[in-house]
Length: 243
Length: 331
Ligand SMILES: Nc1ncnc2c1ncn2[C@@H]1O[C@H](COP(=O)(O)OP(=O)(O)OP(=O)(O)O)[C@@H](O)[C@H]1O
Ligand SMILES: [Mg+2]
Image 1: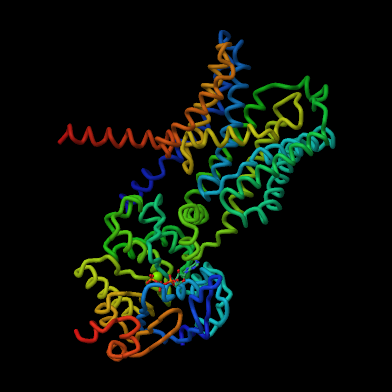
Image 2 (image 1 turned 120 degrees about the vertical axis):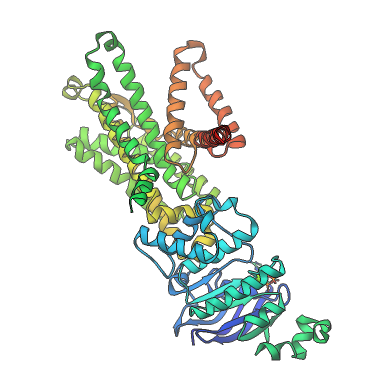
């Protein structure tokens, strides 16, 4: 197992954001993570990446306990992420945004010129090659999302956590993103995608996990999940079952 | 291959310019010695240059932590002071050779930053700023009671005193600071610091250890300020030890960095040149002696409000505008 999440809980004061969540992720799979607003999806990403500490439970990555590791250490072990609201390094060039991730992260390239070459390759992958020299602040919202993706990929993650990458995209862009996620799988990156767009989740996930109010309420194949009455009641709504 | 070489040459134009400028400044006093009509004024000019170099060094070193790593240190004067007091005491009281005393001065400042930084950099932003200010003030008062009198150069030193060697040492410290900044800003560490300045959480998510990077920037910045203090201890023949700990050194550095452009190599240099020259001019016109405080206060506010990138940003904006115009003309 690449990732093992075992009875993880997280509370903010009185609010139980995660309640005894357990699941495992096999290397090479793409996992969909869904659930209503405030169900704890982003919080789950935050505890896995060490951005915030867990209240209890254990997280193992490649068999090793990473529960107490800081965010930078988790990144160096090979877990990359994007943020739900993008956070590019605004006053740095697009190239430097990606290059700095090549120099640190799991890739930890020691030579600047190698890091720079690698960064250009990754920018080409996300179609930002021509904007390499401009400051990230000058990019539009869409390009900023792809820059965020490029930066996460530049750390050379084994596991990549995508937090609502497709939110706010038009249907064509969603399709493009789905294809991109499938390509990540082809190059051997394990992905967990948080997404509200069910079609996207259905077409790129091998398995789907459903959170509701901090608890895992279902897990299974996408086709089974959309027919699961518990999921329909908690998240998808009766309309979805009919269509 | 050739085009790549050419491009890297164009991208790195700053380095040859800096080297040429440094060389020119080192030769400058030599150039003027043969000019009798200039000779009467040369000591004034050297003194002004030393002041400029000192403020430029303090600003450039302050900029390493603030401009690159994004933490405002309001106790920078403490490191200038530590450098000067340690150098002065070792050199004059303990009879160390000057060069040794000088490096111990810088080292003491760096060590102080390491000791203070380890807890203080757990705090961030405004807490760090206020914490450093409070520590520096406490240190200033302590030094004031430890060394109450005026520190004077002893007779033999005084008889051998000449300004050119003082000029050279403060210039050396400035050149070292600028080159350190230059190489830092293009190094892996420098990129990591800029990422932290931009967004700490995002920086952490790509594997950057925020604490170690800011601590390194702080210690390096303090070391260079300490060397500036050592050069000051060499330069002044009599001053009160408490003087170098004064908060005005910190605020001058902060002010000129913001006026020139924080986070850039040229910003602190341009800002301090502007500051020192205008202040000198105003001091010359006797009624306006202290108006520079008000003037620079106003300039500071205007720059922060209208031109957050400082004078450096203004020049890039103008050159961009100019480029657009010329392109239109030639099309
Ligand atoms: N740092 C925090 N401090 C306090 N409460 C928090 C914090 N982060 C999240 N929460 C709360 O925890 C709960 C889960 O939030 P989380 O962001 O994980 O939800 P989500 O599933 O990602 O929702 P969305 O689909 O809207 O992104 C919410 O009630 C939220 O208000
Ligand atoms: Mg969320």
